[in-house]
Image (cartoon, rainbow, N blue to C red; front, side):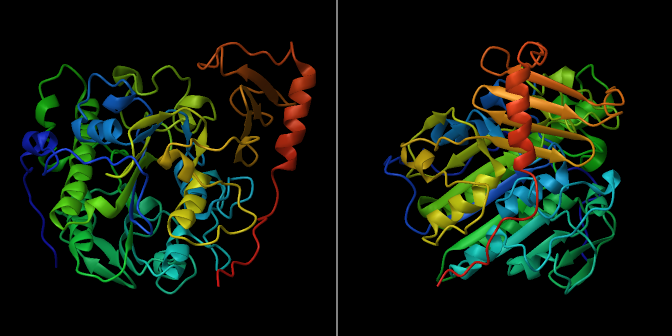
Length: 451
């Protein structure tokens, strides 16, 4: 049995801990050939809940340094405004109009990944990488040997939660390690266990490159921190959930610092690309009020919404060989798999919705694209094409009448989506809706044969 601390760690010190080592040496030539890759996925972290996106209440010094030294994607979009379909898009390169998982459990039966789903873990393993998933997988069932288990989808090592609902427990009674469960004592803080396991994976001696997928549960509700102490936020005149939420974000920042420190300590930093992002917009659950932190920045909506606040997410790509810059063209979760294939020297699978972002890492810029698609079946759909965005609500959803509702926004002039232009531009609305409908259907991928 694994025992964890019954009292809090020194949270203030952990949150302030900088990366070990001096400033990165930025050659500016782009990432190395076949780099190690660390993908860090936060859970419900808002676009503006980090300092590099304008956050002033919660301190995120380590993420801010990564953003200052790497590529900051100003218009990065998640795969969906909630967990499971967003993660499916990240892992498979398909938006939620094509991917296997298009809804969370509470929205109806949640499908699991299947043998047909090639994840970036599976692709990188085909490329000869040592692969691991440590944290929240998010697709059930909680059984070994089934097609949706991380080991079956390309991750040689797995430690964490398989299912979606189990991951809401910060002090679990058990976690999975590959095909078996590890009993816990209910006093071990799961994110701390994830960090420790990830550091060990990074420092492991190996002769080939590695991929670490690190989907932590921070700062998802409930707002729980060890000992209940919010550290530097404990004396703020806020509610307990808000104080602890801020502390969760601080712990996330410190955990990312620990991973980068492990890269430096093991001599791996110079040949590693770190990608940091969040699965959707900020939550307002169990007493947390995003408005207190301006978690959405200038955007409307939060988790579960297809307004910008629900799907705009912070995103950084960092590597000592990558020149610092801001990428303003839109990018999305389904771009990650083709990007990793490109970095690993593998053919990009056919029939994906994503495109490689290698150009953004070399200074050439992200590619132009025709549109971005989001799909919550029987609820809400959206399409962005250039400056224009349409949001379509199903009948009875979010106050829509029996015939539903369609809204049109000009994101260039109105990024906060306050002025609905649908009535003024019916032709444009019809054109965008036709394009949206044409982009939703079965999985368009072809079988992958890299050799």
